[in-house]
Image (tube, helix red, strand yellow):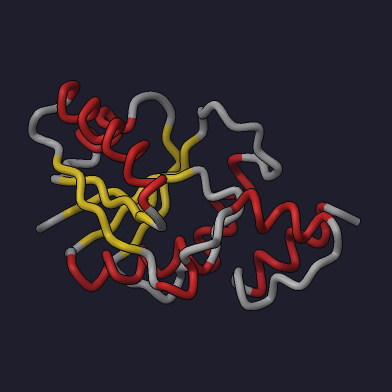
Length: 158
């Protein structure tokens, strides 16, 4: 069985994230969506809220499972017996950061590969931080996130 990890903070999960996850599900036997508990970012949603939202919006993907994780990504990948990490790229600016991370991960765990998928053009501008900013000002995000995420965001900013 070919298992991969799609990691992220998912604060919140967007349609761009879902595009990458769905495509990974078409390529691999099992996709573990790893929701990062520790990161350098200040999150709007708690880890439990983020995991619950990701589970809700991926429930139609039978080969996807959602798990929170702490610590190094490569340690999580090893624990889950995955062969690779799948990351989405929006633009050249993403590549520079993701390349550095993939090289460091390779240094820490030589057996773990990184696979990059280009984000669909309609989501190339999309980021969780932009979504949070627009939602905080009452802007329309209905085409950018699943309905459950839209509802949760507007509830946070009431």
